[in-house]
Length: 578
Image (cartoon, rainbow, N blue to C red; front, side):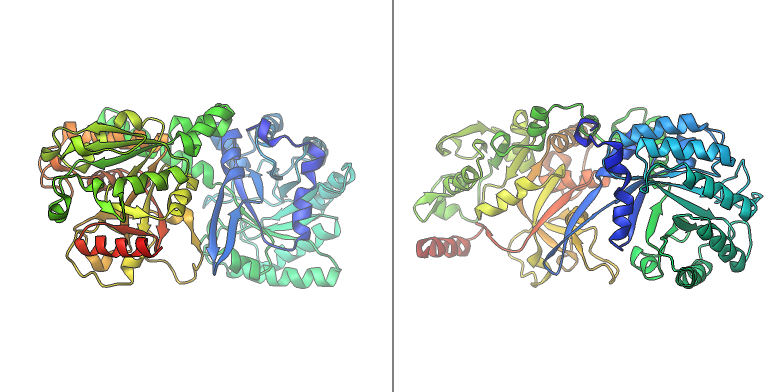
């Protein structure tokens, strides 16, 4: 990532000030080492709001004293020296182009603060926030800790001296007011804000550990009046750790312009490490811990270990992705029309069903196609397609047929049911998905009453019930919670159409789960009467239950399952007309 994010200090330093000129909320996330800097700096989600694209990402990184100290195993009491902090800062700066705000604690005395400002500015940091406590400070969020505030005039002089040693106008000094933390009233916070603003500070951060935002909002309103009185435009900053029920929009409406998520990446990492450690101890193996861990390959990719060629392969250039079509079963419904042929050989407007699937795949440059045959396997054929045989197809399920082609899975693959036709663009859209496991799901099932007559693989979306305020649909939120043919139709949000994509990592997760279940389970398994008859949806549900994330790509048209004679008649009529 360092080579991908080359930026000179002078080009980075002014980015925060430029963002402030845009007069919008600036979203900041904590980082405590290079890897967390990569995560926070590259985090991004995309969605739609009323047909318009929506993109969200973090605008800047926060190098936190708390998380820097904790990641080194030390308490947040300014025990970690500034040179150690500077090493961490430089690690993070090396992996992102985002601007950085540094938590400067108290800043030390005025002499120490001058050197801090000078070193941070040269490094390319955009801002430092210092709190008006007496050195050595104690963390503000822990109840029952004595908090001693510095005399505001002494703190103001520290600000003046810091501003005086700056070499550019791009570097910002922001004062963090701790009045509410120390139990002082609004008047004390406003008096300190006035003093610091008159000393030349570039912004004010008001801190609170109350879950009730009333004191925060009162300060924000009074601060706006104070700026008007002084004829200044200085941003107001907050850290909504305790009052985290407030949305960004709500805080922006109150006048806050910089919002810092100050410790969340370290807290998340700590909890995950505890859970993984417990899972390994409980199970005496690491299999159960895998869903809690990122794949090693993801870490390799994040830190730049993989070269461009391998990244391209992993991300799945279309021509390199294997396609597996499990087609071993005998179709009892359409048997009179098949004359002893496999269903994939069904004639549709002069071409076999399989030929039409192969043509759609070829349009998307997918040419590595494997069909797993069983019933009437000697009659299965299509140009440019490899045929494997599941000789025991009568005693297994579609999932067992799929695993006959497991040698084709290792670099990632597409799975396509043998009885569906679909428009070419659906495959192309699926190839653009970057998640490890993606099922294609039709959302029209939630708008039409289920009439029965054929088994559908229903999906219940994890995000089905959302607060009304969340109107934007983000693709990364399309997660499967339940999947199966026996789910109550009225609870279903989607239908799985029989097309899925697995990255290399997703394929590894699928194969490992399948192997563990077939070797170690007996009897009923999800919707299967016996684990020996488990189906694709059973394995997917098992993966979800184990903690793996299964995404879906939403469609609402452009496909048809050939299940009954009516389906065949419909598609023949359509293709002949076209």
